[in-house]
Length: 501
Image (cartoon, rainbow, N blue to C red; front, top):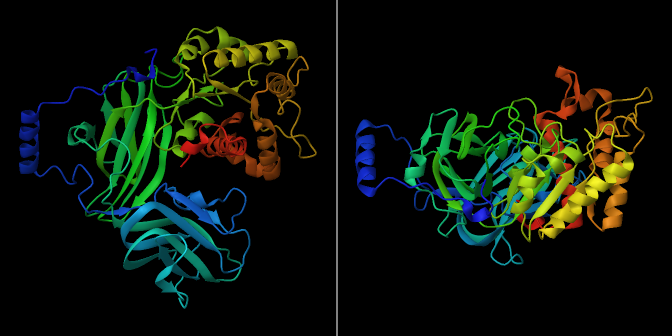
C-alpha cells in the first residue's frame, strides 16, 4: 500500500494505432451497440445529484431523496395538504426539453411544473392541474432555458401526500461536467452485459471515476458497486436515448475488502460491477484523486463484507458522496479497540495515510466483550490522540445495537453493549468524547430508537434473522445504519458534509 494518496496511477493505455484497428474491427463486426462517451447534445438527466429543496419535508424524507437516482427513497411533504412544492437547482442555466416525475404511488396527483433563471420569476411550462390519470410515472415535454425547476402539487387522491421517489430534468448538457472525461479505451476493458464488469490495473490510492449510464435505443436500470461490494450508486433508471452521468471518488487498496484478508483479498487494482434489471454503461473515465478521505475504523458491522448477505454500514456510505471525497473502510471482522490498535494491517497501516482534512470515524464495542471500562477508554483515547497527531479529525461512533429484545419489548443490556465485566461501553465512549473534546455520533441511541420503534418482528429485516444472526446487517439494515450516521454528521456539520450528494 502506498504511503501517499497520490500514489495511484492510471494504467498505460494502448497506442492510437492499435485503437484505430480495434475500433475498425469492432465496427465491422457490429459488436459495439452503444457510444463510448455521452453523445454531443444528448438528452441527459440534468437533475441527478444536484441541490434540491422544498417548502416542507418529513423527517428522514428530505428533498435530496427525490433526485438521488434511487427509486427506493423519496421526498415527502410534512403533511397531507396540497400546495407543497419541490425544486431543483441545476447550478447554471441549461436548455431543457422536459421532466419526468415518479410518484410514491400509482394514484392521481395534480401538479404544475415551473422554471426560472433566477429563482424569483417563474414561468409555468407544464400544467397537470386538471389531470385524472393515476399513472405513477408522468412525463412533460417543453422547451425552456432555466436554472431552477419546480413542481407544485395542487391535487391529491384520498389518503395521499405529496411524495416523489424520482424527478428527472431532461436537456442538452452542453456545459463541462465535473470528473474525468469518459475514455473509449477504458470502456473497452469492460466485459459482459448483465452484469457488466470492469477491471483497471491501477496502484493503491484514490481515484476520480466518471460513469455515463444509458443506451440510445433501450431503457436501463443500472446499479454500481466497487471493489468488495461497496455500493456506489443505487439503481438508476434511464429512458431510451437518455443518459445519466455520475462522478465519484473511490479508494483502492489491497486487500480490497477487509484489511486482514478475511473472506478473500480480491484482485489488485480497481473493480467495478454494473448490475440491475437492465444495466447500461455508455462510458467511463478514470483519473488519480488527491482530495480528502473519510477513514473508517471498526469491526464486522462496519467493514466491507466480501460475501452477501452480510453487509457493513461502511459499505453503504460511498453511495451518498459525490466527487471529491473517498471512503477508505479499514473495518475488520472480530476486531476490538485493542486488536485494531495492535494489528499491523489495521491502525498501523491506516495511520501513516491520514492527512490534514481527513476524518476518521471510530466504532468499537461489539468485540470488547471482556474489556474493562478503563481499558476501553484508554484504547479510544489512544486512537483519538494518534489521529490528531496526523492532522486528521477523529469522530467517535458508539456501536449499533444488537437485536435482542426483553419480554417488555425493550432491548436487553447485552443488546445495548453492557459487556461481560459490567462495562457500559457506549457510556464510556461518550465520556471519552467529552474528555477529549471529540465529536460523537451516538449510533447506539439512534439504532436503539430505530429497532425498538420497529419492534421484534419488523426489525428482523435490518439483520440476518434468517441466519439467526442478530448482530450483523442485511443490505437494507446496513443502509439504514449508514443513514443514521450521515444524519448525525450533518447535524455536527463535519468536514465531509459538503461532499454529500
